[in-house]
Length: 411
Image (cartoon, rainbow, N blue to C red; front, side, top):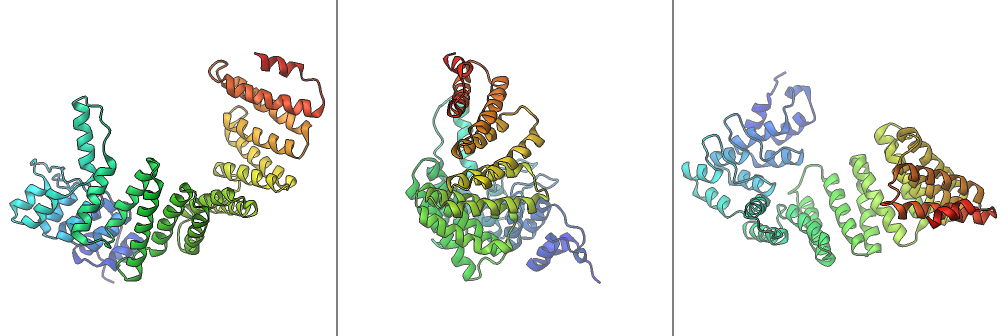
């Protein structure tokens, strides 16, 4: 049986063979680092292979032994599509090889003026970084215009590819994040919605063929997250449920993130039963993901589940959930850690709601002991007073003398 080396596969331009190489098939030999493969594919100018490798975390700014970047190699191959694929995914046009030549200068040297013109006019995040560094050197305290640069980048892509090209999705995703960070939620929703629409249309028309289930789920997850920030709870819920339609074909980590956002959407709508079910799914996913029934990642889901069950007056199940969270933190963190105090407070509050004040008192006292040992008595006095007040409430509710705690409150 003929064995294909990684270089032969990159030279041939076969997408199927590269996919098998990435999957580790013995028939195609030992897989190289994805960034090394990206250098080879850039050298031979195969844009489809370049995009696949970039989806597998290849570094678009990796360099060969002579200092040439992927963008340098794509320019010498004469492939405009390969050059654009790298630029769209963060290739830095300012990088120089060992002779001090940029990719644009190299394209001019080999007589490819079209590629040189595209590189010259391309607006990338690296321009923003360079601008920020220049301002920093000049001691100018001016905020970098991230939105302006991204909007210019989007306009650049639209003029080159049209307004429905797959290359727009990464820029639209970044724009949505920036708009959300600036509290411009409507614009964030608009950008993320457009990104999702472009991706799904590309999948339906066959422009996107690799790992379509994961791409769909990621896009819907981002949209659901933005909708949640926009307080469009029903739309967020529907979007995230659509994302979960693809859960059988994607990684557990992505499923876990979707369920977390979905649980937040349920809670915002006071759908506590559905919220509990979402956190139970998260706990199950973490167990399958880590192979451990008591992994530290499970602490927050167990606490959130207990809180949700308490609201539904299912106090027995709530106590069991908090007890599991406490056992995990005790096992992993030792007797004195602020995370344990947080779990203790939640557990104690659950006992308060079920009117088991004596148990609440014990937990609040232990929480107070941890906080007094770890926190600074002056700087963190508010936190300590809150814990002390909670313990005092539990004692008073139980009908016992609380002079000692009241003295601490006066301090």
